[in-house]
Length: 394
Image (tube, rainbow, N blue to C red; front, side, top):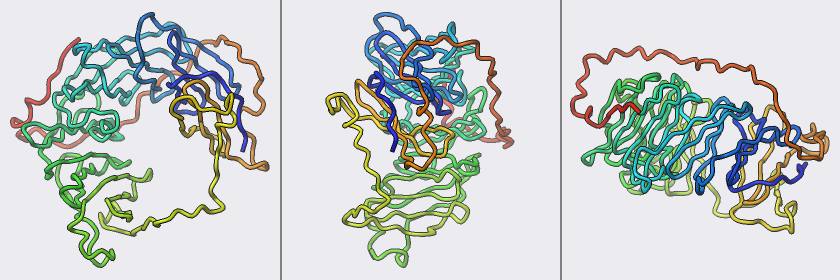
């Protein structure tokens, strides 16, 4: 293993999607640090009296950073001075955002408000706001399960009105409703697009047994997975137990891992929508030779961890895996490479921490390559659920 030197940090520290920069949010500024040199290459000064921050996020292109507060959202250019966008919380200050995320582009911001009152989409270029009432999930841990963005840019959203689940599909550019329907669920717990965008996967509450629904992009139910059959498991009464607890689609979109409330994990083949294998978790975990322990506390001052430890993978282009580790005051990186493996990107970095000026970034944002949504939806009756959605001009 190779450890980087320690650098000053805060509870809000995040690496860019392209794995080249690290942003750290302080009370009065945002520091942008290069991973290769470990030096601060840009510092963004924040307005005074913003209060405690809720989140620090990178845009999909790694060119912008977002700082979320109780009544404001600030977006800055990561490397170029001058760009600054502010989104005011349209709700009362008492209804602070619970979850904020960039949408399909650097100009789109998604926000959930407190108590699940609204799901809002802000467009920074047009200053247009789309508000949708009654999103089903709004807490930081559950909100990502309540919406999904298709590779084409179309948004699928799960709402609940009058005790019924509603799934809506929104246009990739205008976010207007193209399709909405009541799924065959009593209490849906999440939805997700497959990486190729062919299927919209919705899973039912564990209290309703094993149930995963496969919908086409235009809302037609294709197939339902009702759990492992009796010959696939030693538990003869598996159909009487609790259902899906966690559902995760593989990056290549070929399989879905389904974990219920037992020690078993079912791996489904998406093309066949059936169980391809079953994995059983052992009752006792026995470490193997492949297990690596990283004691990063020994690298911190006084060998102590302040606050909650933070851990994330660094998505860089090198051959070795790199972790970003730290606490509320300091962060460092660790390369899991052995002594014979290629060196970490910071091995040749200088040992000083000077603020550097950067030249103009001539890289232009390219429009996302989105597939067309070709389904003809003009003949569909959406009167039952159209009143859920509203558009508001800021």
